[in-house]
Image 1 (cartoon, helix red, strand yellow):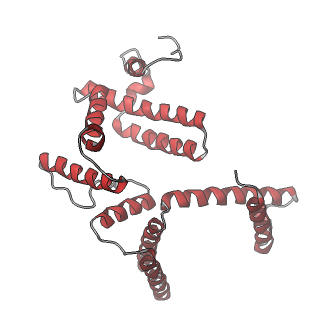
Image 2 (cartoon, rainbow, N blue to C red; image 1 turned 30 degrees about the vertical axis):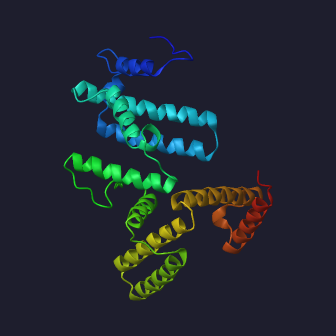
Image 3 (cartoon, one colour; image 1 turned 180 degrees about the vertical axis):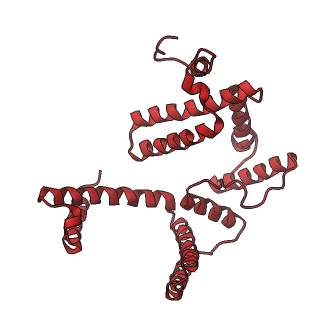
Length: 270
């Protein structure tokens, strides 16, 4: 098979995958299993997020392609087991989206997105009942999600059934309470107790962010980007003065850090 030209369709990608897995295909691809592919699926998903955060359309397109390849790869492995193929995957999600959007594809009327989400939840519950599954409130949040994102999703699900603070002020009070409990745990010197209380604080902060209309995972990701950028700028300035980070005093580093932070804040925002 030659180089795929622009305009190639989804079917050609599936054909490429089938060729790679053929007896005379790629040895590496043929050795892969669902277990070995899990890491690549996670990695490609995060690279899609990085492209979105960087506002890089070209990179976004490329990374979506890499992610799509992982989906096609796993579907083809299942097809070889006689379980399902990529056509079944596409058909399943298409059917689900039509069923879950009766306000678009049927005669149901909704007034806003809040009502859309409420109907979505009811439809999901009905689907589980049809399958003989009893769905609990917190079901559907993957255990392997990043912890902060999982905290956000669990908080949303609990709030959907009324288990939530009425406003942001209530969560803010909870944060003060959790901080006091951390101080008590630190005074007690029990590492397990300290970890327990720090976890409770992070959970409360996650819900506080949601009350303020902020996605905590995105907020922390942005903060980490800022920290990384400022730290690297500080390190570059230290090296430019002929020193190393480990040879600088905390006071010196703090002064440079504040200068770097001030310069970053002075840059006009586009």
